Length: 408
Image (cartoon, rainbow, N blue to C red):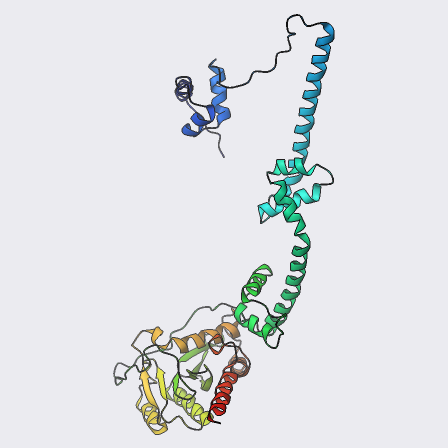
């Protein structure tokens, strides 16, 4: 930083302000002017103005009537005072030099405590605490808690290893799903809190995968017939096979090539009941996904299927297929992705967790294989927050078991 310079007029005015204000202090005037108090003190002394309240150095002149023996005792006492002061200053300089590397760490207060603990065999604790400006009682309290901190650190290290093992099997997992995985089948004493899991993950730089860019796959048909929104953003259902949502998403395969995935997702369990992958976005893509869902469920009669206004979903052939299967169509507003947020969220999770930050798969074969494996795991093993951190199929089976038990 460049050194500030002040005009002679400014210096004179500053000195005059101090001289003409009997109640003012050097520190107060300096703060008002935005300068260092030592700078102002220098200007005042140079102008020959006495600084109020400043103690003068002890005179070495002997008092009247002092004998040579008394003078010798007085001077020796003064020498001892100066030597003690010098030793004190020297000790403080040594302490501050040693403490410098501690103060660059994350938690400054903890670093000061640690510094005192590391140097208490070299310097007095009282002096150390004074120099680094911490209370001795606070230091001793921190020191007494050291065994508990060490035990916590050991436990956190063990937990970090468990988290890393879960994360290695699915790098997309965040703290909530990892917590559910760790607590699955664990005893009461072994269960962990999701906040602690999140803290340990941050400390060890373990994180899920974030989504990258998007490509538009919804091309509305201006001539398509009007279909009402029967869901109105209520993506819940009282039982499986009653309400579904679906969408089309792109699968980048390198060299500017794409595959396309059409989905049919159950609102009750978030299960992907039907899907279809192709290298086109024709009506057959969404029709094949709906037929796959019908085969999986046995029947879709009476169910609602909600989508956006893509041209595939308003095509005559698709409309006829829905009528044959007994499916009631529902559509959100044009250009409003929130009206089909559940399907959009599924697409985002799929690509975030399979691409893992990459721009795409090397080829179509790899894309099909990876997506198929992820869908299988999604339905059978991947814990979903909506399903109380159970997998979609497990969540459905729990519903069926409860229904049978109630009927019995």
